[in-house]
Image (cartoon, rainbow, N blue to C red; front, side, top):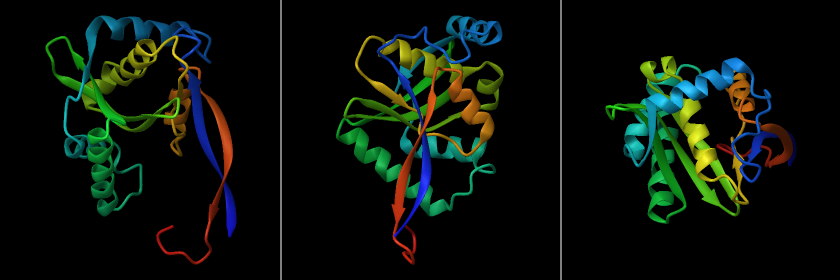
Length: 181
């Protein structure tokens, strides 16, 4: 067996929505204020398949993932939702147009940000800022840890840090010679 370091980025919701690692930089806070005025949080705005297509259309080039993995993850999302362990949340504009969406697992004191994407207009309107901020606010004061799951894309890892997330590494064991492990 070999091991390798894996990363995860965590943010506690028990300290409330005001805790930010960028210490409330004016630019970040201005984006959030504006986004709060222009968005609303909605549950289950689309199916796992639609979220997967949105992700592929917006981030597919940056993330090397074979099409069969998207199908597997759609199945995981459907099963988690059926067992009340997962939810798809979205950010819409005030007219109800979906601008960003994400899939979140919740179990064992954690909310895990598994999968998310913004439309082109959602990026312009900082809709993912709103979505994550709204979820932190929704769960503020609860003993939950928001696990951003890390990212190999530097700009996304930096973005997660805007919410007070801290990087943690852990060991991952893989069986040598195991195909698909």
